[in-house]
Structure formats: C-alpha cells, structure tokens
Image (cartoon, rainbow, N blue to C red; front, side):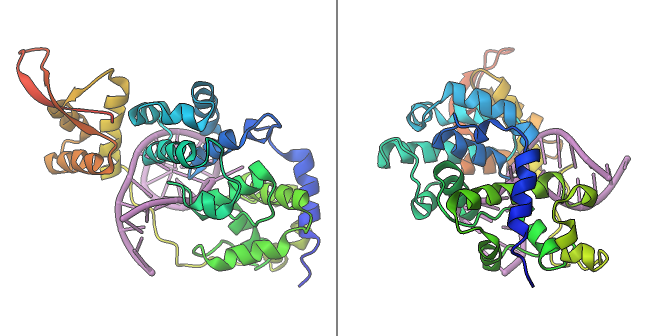
Length: 301
DNA sequence: AACTCGTGGGT
DNA sequence: TACCCAAGAGT
C-alpha cells in the first residue's frame, strides 16, 4: 500500500487548521514545552491552557520550580487531575536543575530517565522543543494510523509496532517530520476523533483505508474498560486534595476523612494511599478551632 | 501485563 | 442520562 501521500496532505491541512497554542509559539522554551506535555497527559487542551500560563509565570525555569515546596506544585496543579503528575513534574525539575545545569535535555534517553517522563513525553519534548527526528505517538496518532493505514475503526493496545508505523510515515527532513508528528496528533484531536469523526473535513479521506472499506465495525475488543468514577477511591482522594488545596495550612485528619467519603473504610483508604504517594503529609497536631483540643492533622508536602 | 491514578467535556 | 474518552506513566 502506498502511504507516501499521507504526510504531505496532513501537513498542508495543519498549516491552515492548526490551533494557535502558546507552547507552539516561537517564544516557547524547552521547559515550557515540557510543562505542557506533563499537563496534557490524559488531559484536554482547553483545561490545560490557563494552568499552563499561570505555572510558567510563577516558575519560568526548572530551578524556579525546584526551589518551591512540592505541595505548592500540587496546589497550582488545581483540578487538572492525576495530581501525582504535579509531584513528578516537581521532581523532574529538581533532576534537571541538579543533573543538567537547569537545561532540559534534548536526548530521548536522558529525558526518559527523568521522573514522570515516559515513551510519549520523551519523544514529544525531543521533537517539539529541539526538532530532533523521532516518531511521536500518542492516542490520537494511534487512532489516525489505525484508520487511515490499517483500515480499523480504532487502535488496539499500545505496542512497539506503533512507533514503527509512525516512523514509516515520517518525512525524512526533520522540520517536516516534526510538523507531521504534531499534525497527526492534531488531526486525531479535532477531525479523526474517537466518537464522531468529521471525515468531510479530513485531508486524507480519499486515502483512508477504513473509509474506503465502508467504515467496518472492526475495533479491537481488547480495550480495558475504565472504572466508574462516581463512588470510586479516586473520587475520595480527589476530595481530600481539594480540601487541602483550598486550605492555607494543615487540616485535621478527621476533617479530611469526612471530606473523603461516607464510607469509613474508603475514607481511610484514601488518606492512607495519599500518604503513601507523598501527595499528603502528616502534621504532628493542630489545635481544633472549636474545642482547643490537639488533634492529628494532614497537609500538602 | 494488568492495574491504578482525577476531572471534565462530548455524545 | 450514563457512558466513553482524554497530548500517559509507574508499579
């Protein structure tokens, strides 16, 4: 099958239709791009934009963030979700400041060695911040390739094969390759969407194997189902962190348990796992406002 | 290798 | 309305 037409068509579409995002501007730095990639993990662009702007105004360099308390990173993370990312981003900032002279490394393997940076983020930073020539594969790219190249309705489980598939489509010239990496993601994000693809707006509709086959319902059945959020431990943990974020200092352990869940076991589990994850620390004690009694308490790290 | 980890938007 | 899904990573 001839796939040589895909990258030029998608790049031409991208030139006309790409969203204007601040981390794509010339003023973006490797650090600001790295921060955007952390925030964008499993999180949509519109929710990231305001947090990204505030974050970089406050911590414009890795060493600036490294000098802050990790709990302040968790607080500034606000409601972006998966708050361990805030802790990991802080840790990565310390590692960059201490081991790389406050400069984000361009090398994929050096990036992979940083906390919270995996196969996607390492390549994304190397390519988008430094223009290196690598395939960058996220969930959008995997879906675009599954449909356009493999004729499938959806991608299967992530696999090493994904990188080879993308590498096969990548233009040889680094700048065009970097553009195509971003453009394939963009196409998946706003045209070749999971639920209701806008094929009438797609620059490669005529090349798409899935469309050519008549949109067969052949999605791989492997995909693990996402657990229900309502009533989950995640929700209970989220409530504890929400309480701590809006509190200036420590909060009584009883108040945290009460906020977490009506189920005492689940509430206890939420606090225990947050402590284990380092998202919360135990305070020896605080004075209860009502009674003046000294009670155990929790605070951000 | 399967499981866990938030929160909100789109349908 | 429930449900699916989201610029993934660590264990």
